[in-house]
Image 1 (cartoon, rainbow, N blue to C red):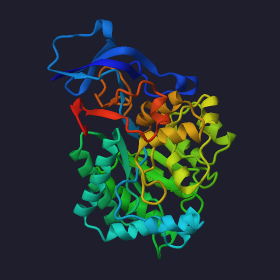
Image 2: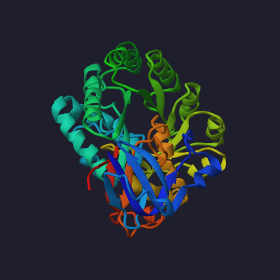
Image 3: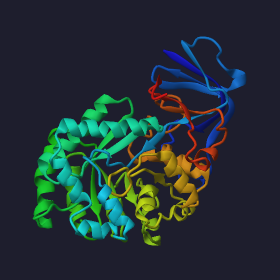
Image 4: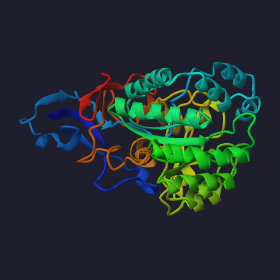
Length: 412
C-alpha cells in the first residue's frame, strides 16, 4: 500500500542515506522542508519533497497533515520497562532525603524489584510490561531498547529476557534486548561468586536461547568494579553480544574507559564526567547517552552534554524508564529537560532523541530519520505545532495528531 502524506507544514529530521549519527556542530543541523509531502510504500519511506512537486496521484491512501510537523518517531535507547509492581514507598524515602545509594544499602532499589519480579509469573510480567510499551508508543516512541537486570538469578533473568522477546514479537515498534544480569549483587551472595555465575552460567544460557542483542553492566562504586565489568563484558562478547554500559552515574567510576575498551555502542548515564572521559570518547564508535529523567527524579546532576558537543562528540538522550529512578517513558519530556536543564538547543535535543538514540541501540540504519528506505515510523503533530522548538517548549500540551509505525496507523 502506498500512503501519501500531504500539506506538511514542516518535514523535519531529513538525513542523507548512510549517515548513522550526528556529532559536534552537526548536532545543530535538522534537515527540514517547509510545505512538503512524503510518500510511504508499504513499511518504508519511499520519497518526499516540496509541495510544488507533490505526487497527487498513485497513492492508495492520503493523509492530510493540515500544516503540521511530520518527524521521525522517538527512539528510546535505554529502558528497564520489564518489571513487576512499583516502588512508590521509595518515592517517599526520596522525598525524606534518602539517596539512591542509601535506599540500595537498606535492601531497596534493584533488590526490591528483584523480589517482586521473582514472585510474578512470566505471563503477568508480560502483561504489566506491555502496558508500558503501549504507553510509550502512544507518546511517540517507535523504537526501544529493553534491559533485564531485575532477575539477579539465572532463571529470573531468562524470564525477563523471554518477556522482552514476546514484546518484540507483539509490537510493530523496533525492540532490542539487553542482558543486564550484573545490575546488582543479590542478597546473601558475595560479589565474586555472583560475577562467576553471570559469566559462566547466565551468559551461555542467554546466548543459547538467543535472547539478547547486547550485554550491559552497572559499573559503579558499590556495584561492579572496572575489573568485574571487563570480565563480564568479555564473557558476553565471546557469544556475540555487543556492549552497552551503565557508566559514571554516581561517580567517575572508570566506566567510560572500559566501555571504549570494549567498543561499546553506547556509554549511558554520564552524570559525572571530566575531560578524561571526553578525551577517551573522541574518535570512537561509542555514543555518549544521557538520561535526564533520572537526574530529574533523583535530584542528581545532569550530564555535561554541552561540553561533549563542544568537544566534537554527539550525544543521545533516553528515558531510563524504570520503577526506581525514572518512572516515565515520555521522550518529549526528555527533550524538555534537555533544553531547560542541560541548556541544549531544540535542534540538539531533536537529534539526540531520534537519529543518535537510534544509533545507541543499533537501529539508525532502519529508523531515526526521514531517509528513503527507512521504516515509516512517524509522528504527525497537531496542526498548532509548527516548529521544532514548540515541541519541548510546550512540553505538556498534547502534540501528537497521528502516529504511523511501519507505515500503519498506530495509537491515533
